[in-house]
Amino acid sequence: MYELNSKIEIYIPQSLKGLVDVIGQHISHYPSHMLALPNSKVEIMFILEGSQFEQFHIDKNKSKFLPNDTNKSVMVFSSQTRPVEAEFKNLNVMTVVMNPIAAIAILGIPAWEIKDLHFEPNTLPHLNGIQDALNTLPTFQQRAKYLEKYLFQQLIKSRYLNQTQQKIRGMQMLLGEKNSILNETELNFDHLYYSKSHFNRVCRDWLGVTYREYQLHKKFRKAMYAINNKNQSLTQIAYDLKYYDQAHFTRTFKKFAGVSPSEYRSSNKGQIPEFIILK
Image (tube, rainbow, N blue to C red; front, side, top):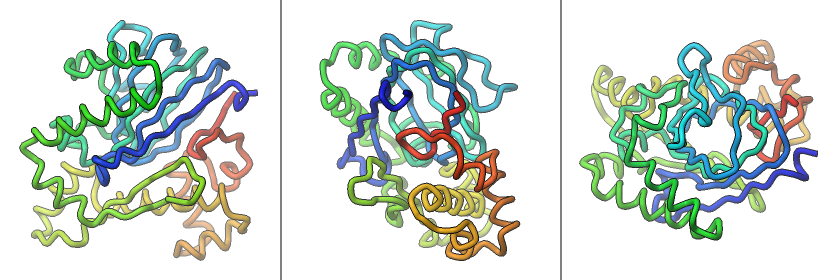
């Protein structure tokens, strides 16, 4: 039922390659309660006309704000280690999914400041005007290209432009299968030669976590895609991804997803495998 009443469109912004993975629109007219598993990305969500949320949070103790509480409905959030929980009656959102370095490169905010939480709309008021334009543009492609142009202009003006270009030099595809609507990238900082203390500061500011934590998370994402897309046993997936053993695989996966690999495999998933439909 959810799939019949839900539509996801995806646009790949070529001018922002390495910085923005996808710009998407998700429309659903079917009440739903879901978990979005952590993706180590920074996301900007524009809440368009018709949306009605019941709840939206990463950490209930930090994020009690609902988009319905304001008419300036733009959120910036980053789920590094915890799932996003969302419940809605109707959904109409444009979302920009960016590598965590975009927090500094485009928004001017160190990535660690939004780790596992979201900002309320008044935090970044310059984004609110974009919402009005998105509501007036008639097609998804026009809305997506409008966002791409705006974000590219922000990047060009950024004092972190040169550093950003250096950081995305080692970017590689985490998933890019033919016929897939997903286009997830992974940053590689192995080419950055800094002292240990400076490297740790760079990772905290640009990734939001330590480099080791970032790599562990990307390993989790590879496991998530393998469980969803490959007809392999969990033991074989654990072996292929070089987990120490099955127990280590289960423990690490559950740390990020909140559910075990077997529970994830049997869960009701949405069009994108990081969405677990709770009801």
